[in-house]
Length: 152
Image (cartoon, rainbow, N blue to C red; front, side, top):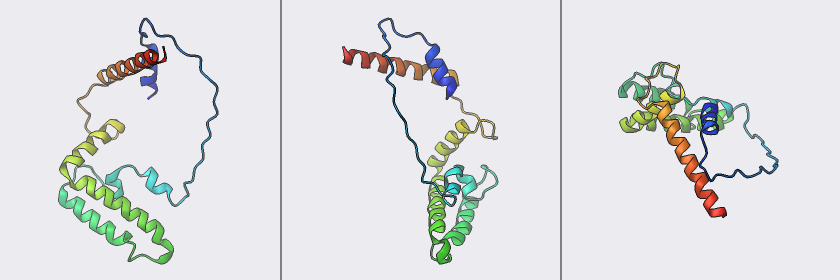
């Protein structure tokens, strides 16, 4: 993301652009995550949620992995002490299965995963980064120009 910001900053502004003086502000942040809920948030790869070793698996392997994991984490079969964590994991499993069992949503997910994890063995996208950055710069400058017209 920093390269995108650097590209935006290095681009030439429109001829009538007048930057505003930045106002100081305070940003506060707090977290409510617990140790038990951190697994769900750090485990973004849906293939890993279903305990699949590879992204090159078929629909039957996905279905089998989902059934195995669902039997393990279903809230009705777990002990009362782990019911809350099992329920969260079961919901995550269900979301992963719904995404990966539908061919269209799986293609979209694989595409997004390929953009995020470029060095993780995923196929690369055909969309060039420079083209994307150029479009982003254009959108940014248009929104700045629109904002400047509204403030006049």
